[in-house]
Amino acid sequence: MPVSTIRPAVNLVVYVSDALRADHLGCYGARFLKTRTIDELAAGGVRFDQAISAAAWTAPSMTSMVTGLYAHRHGYLHWDVELDPSLETIFGAFGRSGYEVGTFVFDRNYLFKDLPEANVAGTSETLDGAIAWLRGHRDRPFLLFFHNWATHMPYDIRHSERGDWLAAKEEVISGIQGDSASALEATREAYRQAVERQSEVLVASLLEELDALGLRESTAVAFLSDHGESWGERFEDKRDVQGVYHMHGATLHDEVVQIPLILSSPGRLDSQVVYSQVRSVDLAPTLLELAGIPAGELDGESLLSLVDAGEEGDRPAILAGTDRGALTQLAVRLPPWKLIVDIETGEETVYRLDVDPRERSPRSSAEVPAEIRDLLYRELESVERRELTREEEAVVTKRLADLGYL
Image (cartoon, rainbow, N blue to C red; front, top):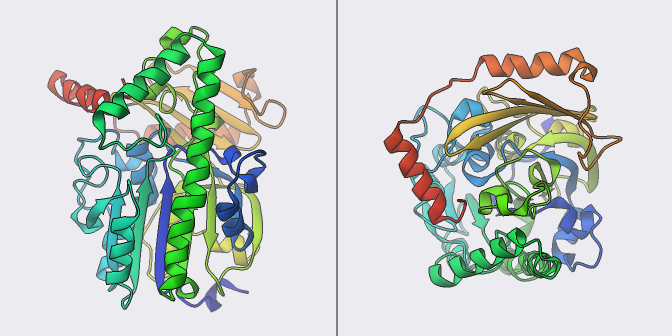
């Protein structure tokens, strides 16, 4: 079915499961996990087998998701930076097109706090607010954006319960620092249980509500993550794992930047698997096209050309690494190659993913195809480097510490 014949979706739901690794879902090959609801969503829609996030932690990656821009372009690299008000978001585009927009987040003091067009309507720690919002807006086209932290370390503990959350976080970090096999397995098991709950309780309940309201057939659903997760395996000395940042944020390895991405739109998108590499920056233009809303000039491209027009070939993904609000790494992932550059030193790290999928054996920089190096260094030329003041760095550090990242 050509893209031009797709009926605009009346409603859209974006469900983001924070820190969810693709390899922990059955539809991506996981074993011994019960994720039937998400697996069925994938089976009835489009599953993108190789989706890559624009950054390794929430603030820059989520901003890339809703703007369609790479992190080094939008510049939202920590929670207290001011996003350029001229930048378009899906929230503003949908709102101006007559859509009701509602967003539910883990903490109003962080995600989308300075984006009034996002209409942050409540917490995502339960489904209650989102379901009430759906019931109240069922008669008009809507965009519901739901970002849940159940799969974010320390896993399935409400962020609002600060004492329990911080204690559990410290227990996880201590177990990793102690290089305890039993503590690591307990952490992984907690993660598996959180993934199962995300699928079989939260996602299942939301889809059931859409069915009960008679909205499922007129609603496109996008399910994805903002980044993946690791458990200190990249650190030889486990004592170097000081916080959440060292589980996601500090590196650009695939366990942290490869994410699940599923699109479901009954009657609009046929069931299929797309094996070409795509990017999280492709989400915004895809949602806009599904709704029939024109998109501006973005880094991302609509995924519908892959789904319906038979476009082939991997899309190059640009990845940003940050530290305390500063851009520290930039990388390009274009299978089978990944090239990472340290912005301060210029040091390059190269992996060939087809023969080294776990990224254990760096290759010689001389092996990287010229077009990949040229692409990355063209992006580096556009990077605006700005040093944070001592006061700004102190604010960033405190905010990251409050979230357990440091």
